[in-house]
Amino acid sequence: MKNSIEEKYNQGKNATEIFKGESELKALKEVYGETAGLFAGILKEKLEEDTQYTLADLGAFKGELAQSILKYIPELDLEVIAIDVNPDALEQNKAADKKITANLTELPLKDKSVDIAMMRYALQWNTLEKQEKIIEEVSRIIKKFAIIQHAGSENEDPQGWRGKVQRIFNDEELPELKRVEIFFSSRDELEDRMKKMGVRFERVDEKVIENLADVYCERYTLDAGKCERVRATLGDKNFMLRTTWVVFPKSE
Image (spheres, rainbow, N blue to C red):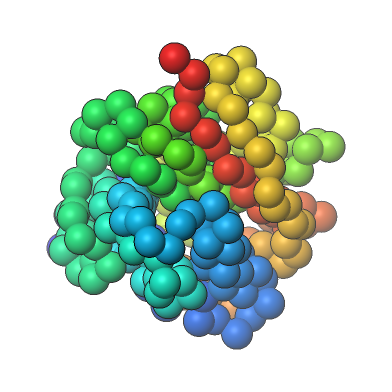
């Protein structure tokens, strides 16, 4: 029987393989397979090889992303602190030197206690207010910078896009996708929030990824009928906007 954490934060049966970027589908490769190389490039550019750094992996799950990144940049000395709300996933995390079970809105870390942090696709599973709190927490704990990657709505019609996408997560015929709190904020909505919060950031990557339905169908192992239901619901909004920011410590 699933515990309450698994029920609330269902990641899908194929999550581990997909998070590693192992899927052959184009949409899955773009959503998950490109992240490790992108993040590794940023870390390599900004960090020195002869220094040890603490890296907070936020929403770490089983360490799939961190493991992939470390393979790209073995020359960097990174001490990984894995933080996730799911203790069962953390127990299986092989990339972490230290593991902490915690909600990202309340990180049990002191101000500027880690050198860097990274977070992939965690914001959209929270309300907009909680997204703001998470970004504030990330900015609070870092000494140098954080890398945040977001799966968001389009900027031209965020409410129209969001309405269709959020509908599939509330569809009683798609229980595999059920989520309690979700809000697919747009790039502009988040950047406006960060500016008002006084959080400094730099947008380093942006990409429109087509065939969003493929991502959900494979990740949650939906049958053909349910996949068609997802595609029909998304209609002309069968895509997402991937945005990646480098975020800096909040000013004193």
